[in-house]
Length: 299
Image 1 (cartoon, helix red, strand yellow):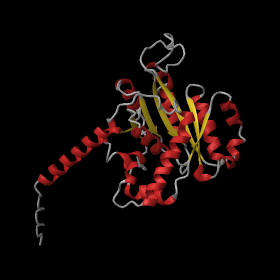
Image 2 (cartoon, helix red, strand yellow; image 1 turned 120 degrees about the vertical axis):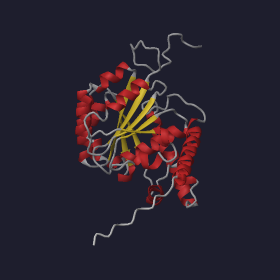
Image 3 (cartoon, helix red, strand yellow; image 1 turned 135 degrees about the vertical axis):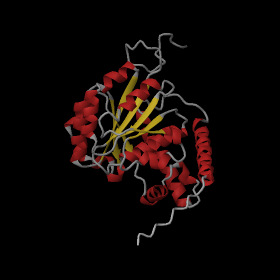
Image 4 (cartoon, one colour; image 1 turned 180 degrees about the vertical axis):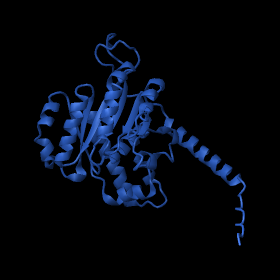
């Protein structure tokens, strides 16, 4: 029996807007090398596999992992902001307000961007503005075993306070869960856990498939069908992705897996991207080649 008063829109208590709640997932980890972009790529792959309609934002101009691995196949999926230049990241808020058809957004913040993101949040009263468009934020903090990860998490919580949801990701590349002693024994973990912090783990991706994905700039799915792949790479990538999905289940709604699904959405996007690339290729070939004028002899 259904409850007529049940909240079917996943809205916060007291929110009167009948539109479904939207979700912005921000993947952070201010120290480089913690596995932040690997987590963002894995999350985006699950969105694609589940046909969850989303927009993904590449904010790392120096090492654009989302762009490098996904834009070649899913061009409309990736958009760009520059968190390091004042005003350039405003596009994110504008898009969330304007693009009503999207209920899920993913932002991969670059390493060493903490100070710039803090200024951005304060200048725009970022979280308050998102409430106006019924968008809840999840801050995903990917950590390693070092004290720096704890320090970054403390600064993140000091900035965002109780305005966002938190997910901490232990990257098992750095060791088993019980080896994260600095984080496990930290006061910030205790304080945040009492307020609903969710912890998950990211499985270690063996270096051979990792290097294969990196060298050919592939999506995780494309590693299974690439002409240079082999059975071992296929098996390891397939297992890692399944394990990754299993380990995210405790953060299901915080990572946006409860959002709208549209069957065939990404297959259609991939086909349209392929057609656009072929058209551009033909146009490029049809352009006449200009022969450079010979240098004049000044003697």
